[in-house]
Length: 118
Image 1: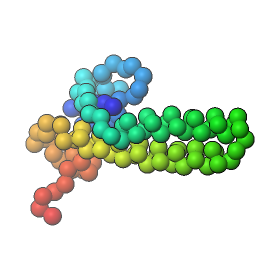
Image 2 (image 1 turned 90 degrees about the vertical axis):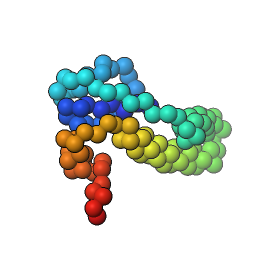
Image 3 (image 1 turned 60 degrees about the horizontal axis):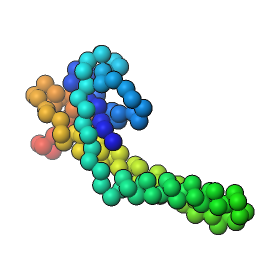
């Protein structure tokens, strides 16, 4: 997974899975690419996706509802893991940004930085 950061717009977004050029769609400026390292949740998502398809296939061929229930439970677990992986990646990408004094106010309004005075 990779995140894209535009220094002009101060926008941080997930890079889509399809190939794109590293230009901001809003201001046409150059984006900074932040690669996110993989961890156990990334591989668990791959395994759960494969098992979900397997259980749905088994449900359609053997006509057993238990396979469908396990497949639906796998989808729910997949969604929870994907959400945790996206939030971990977002936190990692924010930690890798070089913050200047002009950027701090914008990042505080977006909720990326917290006031230390509170």
